[in-house]
Length: 138
Image (cartoon, rainbow, N blue to C red):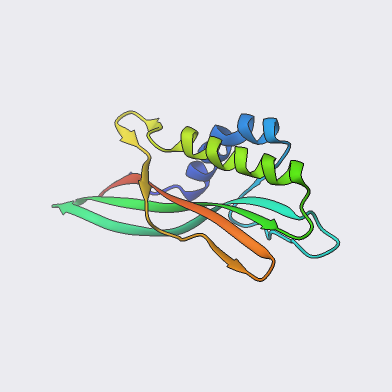
């Protein structure tokens, strides 16, 4: 078995699609740039691939954890109350939909401390991390 980055990302985005639509926001893939400049939207949401970490190995087979983050960005000075509420709702819905999800038979998404929330001036990032088990065999 191999690690298929694109397949995992598509599964994650599909899992979040209904919640994003309900919030009126788009969840962007890893390759997109989130632009919060004064001419862009004051909120943005992205799935970010962080790393693939070896966990265990037996002979030619190994277990890795693909580490991902869900990042919600907000320009706190320009976002409306409705946008702030939508972003908070999507953040909560994403945690509920992803953590514990059986992405395929016997492979469950786990909460993981991989990236912290943070802030730079008026822009705040709310983030939670999760991992997906990846089994590799020679």
